[in-house]
Image 1 (spheres, rainbow, N blue to C red):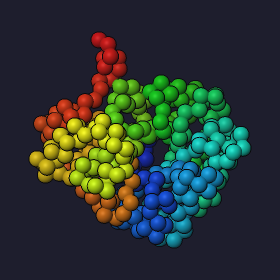
Image 2: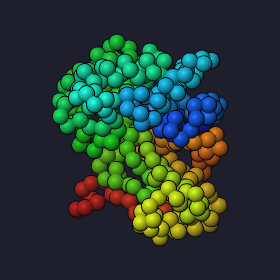
Image 3: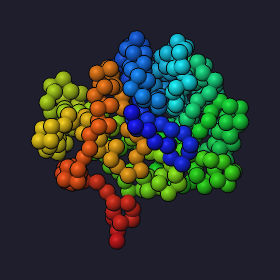
Image 4: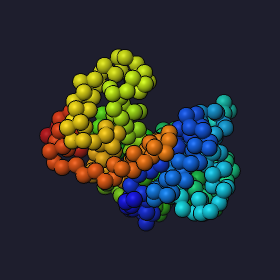
Length: 319
């Protein structure tokens, strides 16, 4: 396994982050535990979750699965850099959502209970809250950190200027601020190259890429009748020409499509880790193999031709 520091923090994380979105709805608890055990065997130490994964409102199904895995002991919790999230509503009551101090406090306590741990390594804001002042948000996070319930703060789905707002507000309070931003990023969705990645690099914030395979579309979807049924015909048609070229390139260089997509992300400036979402140990082992793939300039150029990206702003749309 390869490791790096997460942003400007002293925290060391694996170059692949184990996403747990499928634990519960798609992957049984037994299989989820097996995947997490295998992840540790392979050296993955960074796991990512959310208080709403499992998609049963207020239930925290996925966090409960992780908590029961931690409860088995043998260093499972101690060897894991654990990230979870807060923002989404957990009930129909008006204060059980977003980033008010009240909800941050309650959601954190609920996550700790479900996860069967006394601290969260990286507590991530799942979305920007335009209706709560940054002073309130950072005060709530500071209280949690003082109480020892969280160690670091991260964000997810922030725009570049949200990172700037958050970081400037944290600096005014003499706080460390954000150490990570988790954004959608893959060959087919490269919008964050304009402003999010430049902002993250300027502020020393690590970037984690969710949906690195574009919801499986970059995993060889044209070769699999089963995978093709996951997409509406018009959505698949929109990308078909690119995917045909992409899968032909994979054949040419002898690489599995999913592994090539991950290897490309691992080569990107400012990118700490793709957040992978394996549904089986086989999926996990395949993803880890991407760490050994080196992409030369010719292949990177071909990928840019198939899936054009963006220059940092403002050069992307101005001079």
